[in-house]
Image 1 (cartoon, rainbow, N blue to C red):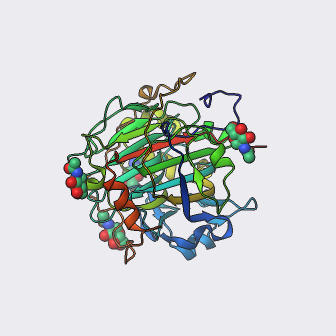
Image 2: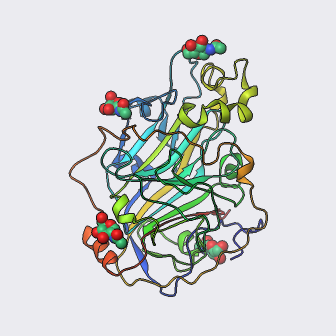
Length: 396
Ligand SMILES: *[C@@H]1O[C@H](CO)[C@@H](O)[C@H](O)[C@H]1NC(C)=O
Ligand SMILES: *[C@@H]1O[C@H](CO)[C@@H](O)[C@H](O)[C@H]1NC(C)=O
Ligand SMILES: *[C@@H]1O[C@H](CO)[C@@H](O)[C@H](O)[C@H]1NC(C)=O
Ligand SMILES: *[C@@H]1O[C@H](CO)[C@@H](O)[C@H](O)[C@H]1NC(C)=O
């Protein structure tokens, strides 16, 4: 469990220890020249989080080079950083949603070289359930704003789902516990370099999310040795950064439907753009101290870092025996003090916004098969959402 050491080239990932070894089977890979094949592009302004962007449709995103596969074979989605935006226009960006839906029993891994950051920038890699938000639940895997030094995880749900302030095995810090609050139930990542420039400087990393009923041990060898077709054994993974246990406080199957994956970048809006978060971090960006006026309007040169570069996203599912979690958290050598940044746990999303309207494909597609998920539930295991981060130190 030495994953947090600076000398370690590989970042650690999530999850607790288990006594059984079981493999997840790959059901979908998004990578390389086919990365964009199974996503829908939003094609409208950000009417969800009220950011100052227009999320392009697919033809425009490609023709304006805001979505493409680069020479390294990695998928890039980005904010327009080459055009001058006049007040009161929006700046172009991208929001994509998977056409597939992933049921409880799924595992998602995203391997990123770079995530967007900078003043006014609000990126997210997250999942969204069906129905009017937040009826189907939402899982925020990567999310941050402005100059935040560390990633924030969250669940959003209807009333009745809570997070524990000190869940066993979780190495992140619980910040808010009511998943139906505007911020959701949030967890701050305490490992360094989980967001922004620090993440990019490390060469990126890997986030894995188990939407699932068991925890598994440590060590990312199983990830860096996996191929685009292999099953994945998570038996060596470490404790999760965020561990949302179902026991007692949130019945995951009640609050979370099958989920779509979403990658998006907005600007300002109901989190990054709020004065109480924008001003302390970015108030010196221009004369007005207003997110839109000082950051979005103008040449766009301040958006050079506002892009995702994704090596792959893989979705897995599994059936099989339920392992017994036995792991203990490891010590993080130098924890990030997430409470020192005013933005954590403070998103102001309103529960009335209908996220994803008009984008829901039908019929529902369950990767693997839904019966597996049902069978897992009948084993009486804890339904949990575990999110972990591994600074995947890429082998160079
Ligand atoms: C900022 O931009 C808004 C939107 O166009 C405009 O209404 C407002 O007057 C601007 N504020 C300042 C201080 O320039
Ligand atoms: C994967 O990472 C582990 C742990 O850092 C390392 O021991 C192993 O050599 C790596 N394997 C590959 C194939 O890079
Ligand atoms: C959890 O929710 C599911 C689906 O709504 C329900 O079938 C199950 O009885 C609930 N479990 C508990 C312990 O309430
Ligand atoms: C956002 O815009 C889309 C496209 O016009 C529309 O279908 C959807 O209802 C809007 N959502 C909200 C919350 O206004």
